[in-house]
Image 1 (spheres, rainbow, N blue to C red):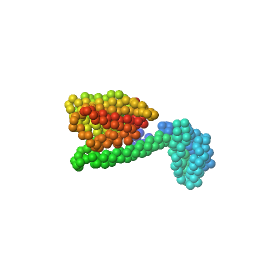
Image 2 (tube, one colour; image 1 turned 180 degrees about the horizontal axis):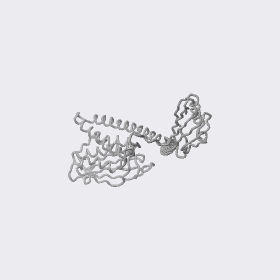
Image 3 (cartoon, rainbow, N blue to C red; image 1 turned 135 degrees about the horizontal axis):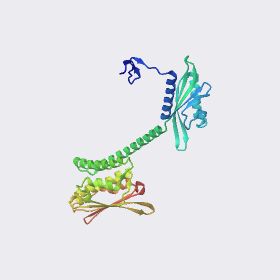
Image 4 (cartoon, helix red, strand yellow; image 1 turned 90 degrees about the vertical axis):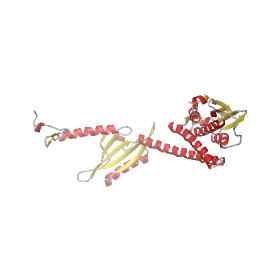
Length: 343
């Protein structure tokens, strides 16, 4: 049985007595621990005397080395002078400084944060300079990526607001009552929201055509797999094209629910997409919607027709036609190549 004096707890105490480590051993262990910490954190440390002669250096990774620690062989002259001037000020004033420098490399610019600290003796005299260097390239790239994304979000948001404003104006122009306006406007905003969800889920890349068409028709059909037949190419539309093609599909689906194939239990709409060469232009995408319609289809121009024949094709720099003849509706939309990419 151990005596109380020999019992130790996890803090290294024996009873009320603290076990003191040998100073030399303690210093060696601390030094090794700090070296591991510097290595794991990617921190380089340089100690120089008042005359800027290197006394010691630890974990001097590329592109830094003891003999080039001032950056004279790495940096532009102006940047190298900034570091040297900061060290001279530290010796003269005892004040610390912090710098950020960029060093061109094969993979682009590498960024570093540099801390310059004066080393004071017990009497307060500056006896050397400690320079600490930490690479912040990945952090810098993340910040730049975030700024780019925020600019992109701002740009997309402005475009979306412009589309909404146009829809509100045109819907009001072709609405006879406030109730009629609200019903149509809500439907079109929901259509934009559905298309925007696809764009957002793809990290703003866009939306696949077939998924976009199925989503818009599916909002007005109990069984889209039966009521929609999609044939041909399935390109990836960019965000602008996805929103406007989605709006066109919405207008066609709403009309179909009222007068066309989607108004009948056994009705079916057909959407085909194929590459077609234009006159003197690169091949574009020809999107065709066809269906059988009833006799009650209105022939006067309303926003749906305006959107299909003017708003959507103009926004895509393309062309469109809407034909209604002998119980058949056909909508043809030509989408130039810059609006999509093939998988």
